[in-house]
Length: 109
Image (cartoon, rainbow, N blue to C red; front, side, top):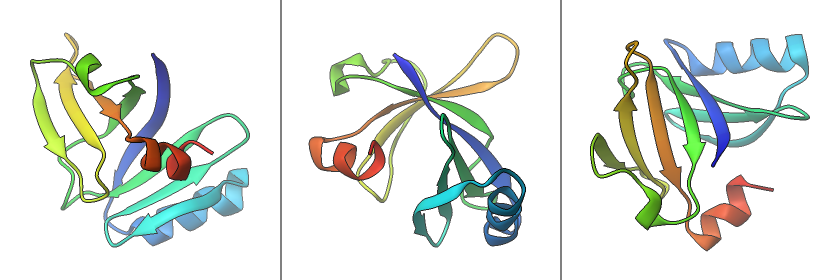
């Protein structure tokens, strides 16, 4: 498994996205009403609407749907990805996320 993204909740996703673009040179690779995906040379940052998503998290990419944990909160996102949110022993959230073949081509360029 690898880290897919770091997700940060924001009141104004566009303002936060612009800050990361201007400050560290991140580039927008995907956007919708509640979510902006940014990439840098070695990382992906997801800026998420805090009224839509319940917590900041680290996204861990799994190879198949079968690799998603059975415990945790399973969410089928609007874009078709499937995530299972699990809290670590210290109160931080991890999202184990799976992409279909089509989504992999979009999100994992």
